[in-house]
Image (tube, rainbow, N blue to C red; front, top):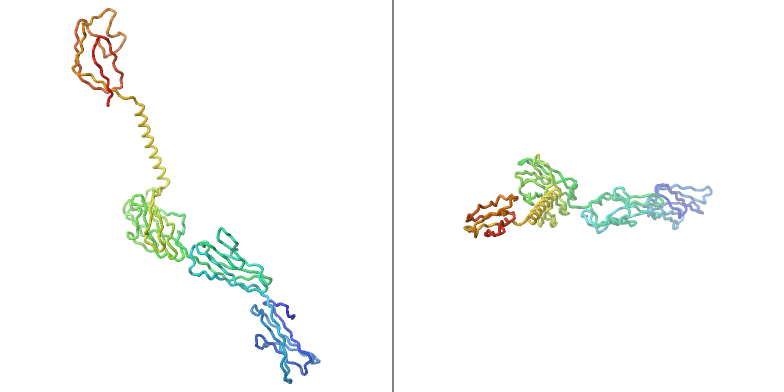
Length: 426
């Protein structure tokens, strides 16, 4: 074959070596990497002036760049053998090996870390394209997700649970496509609820045992759990010592009304403490479930502290309770306003005092003239009675206090002397 002609992996390659002008004929041998090759074919032309030898083989990728030598010697002549050498140019599809960057330890990658992948490629000829895959889905640079594809490297920034999976790189050249082995990316993360949007409600009779599971997922598995009861009666209660537990299952027995409410659980592992708790509601049997005000504890714990130290508690009122309280407050305010308006608009009451032992005397007998009268006949007043003629009238009154909103009695005659004092009731 021509010296510069490449050979491809999997195809049979044939090399020919010729020796001319030797008498007797030359002896031809083939050598690879200093070792003589067997299984060659030798041909001598009729005139004996040309000897030909053929070496056929199937090249491998690792044969690329290696040399093959044909050596000619003469058995009867004491002379140095002559030789010719050819360097193999073997073409093959890319060979890839995927590895994590030197800064990453595969067994200790946690949430928030940056991960570097390197795709090591051997190829002849050079590759024309490199692609990256996660769980058989091709990746592309996505800055918002922290994914950066740069030819033979892949960078994942601030990794989370969503970055877990099987990673692979692939490359292409004129001989075909090659792919790396699959590398599983495990990311350690603190526990999270397996169904974060699901809240379970248990209807329980007092004294009955209910088994509550803290259903979480994490990497690695949790090594501890924390349980609390929250309600508006007792606030936050740590259930660590009061109720027995079987690792992630709480055997809870409500004995009093204050034992009902919301139970929360947090898991803990080497990656940290669960941030958002799993929630279960415990209500008396037969009672309609309502959203009650719950004291929601904070989970600002130091990493590795599963005792719940440093918790802060704040009151969180449910929407139903908030609406009810708002209506009651509005009604009370309206009632107060109505009472105040009525008191302001009503006139002040008056007090009448008739003084005791006060004597009223007419200076002369009252005589009735034909056209004169103490009382108008048309006036229908039951309080004033006409006096008879030619008598003296002595009036003695008993002190009486009366609170009334009625107007004062008018004087009936200028000749009648008495005192009326008006006073406002206290």
